[in-house]
Image 1 (tube, rainbow, N blue to C red):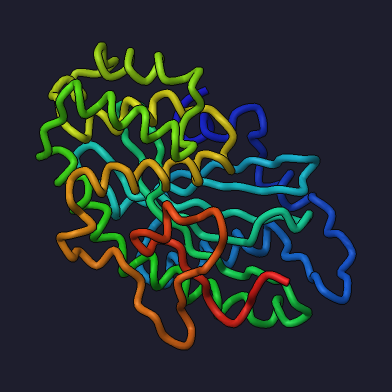
Image 2 (image 1 turned 60 degrees about the horizontal axis):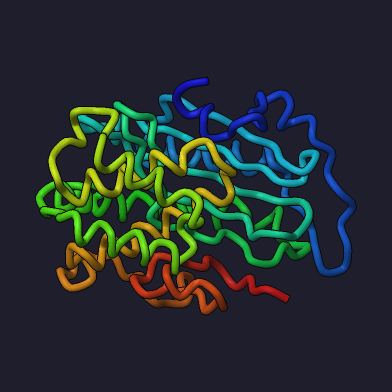
Length: 281
């Protein structure tokens, strides 16, 4: 299994299978969003802002109750990586519907996300009516932020990373729940003996990819959360939180930084956003 499908693991699904997932009944407090409807609207909005999807993969979990897809964008391609987006949706109310944004590294199939935009934290009876507008604003914010991804990787590549600092990052990654303690030896192995010559330089970019190499092929839902935290660690290391590259979210009537317990890692750099007036009940 190669490419984007690797990140969906054994849960890889076709679009026909995604479309065939039955919708649960709505309740007074929850109106489900169809997986295929959310995917279709996101694809349409990407095309509307000039972002072309070159490759995609879909995954279904918990008997179709949870859906995650990964989209690789062609006009976000650079020499060794492409911009990528993820779509997340659930029917069991375990997660909010969201659009995640990040990068896909060609040489190793490593995928990471640096932030997520919550499309709706509560699915009300008006969600179907409001969904196109919410996705439109989410994709618009994604498009505005894509330049930050390119600049972030450039700075990672320019920042020297010593063995001592890498060891410290491993402990911080453990404390931040990026990786479990059982995977730390594999991270250090990937750092000391990189599988690809592109990661031979002792830089933050090579260290970052040592982590994502080990995270590859796991639960797609967890990958988003873990790599957002990982980016938080490396961004602080290289000083992105002090360079003013526009990583913080603007606050206005429609887009607000989420105030959600347990997400301090993402909130520290303002990478978690809420669209519209939907809140957890």
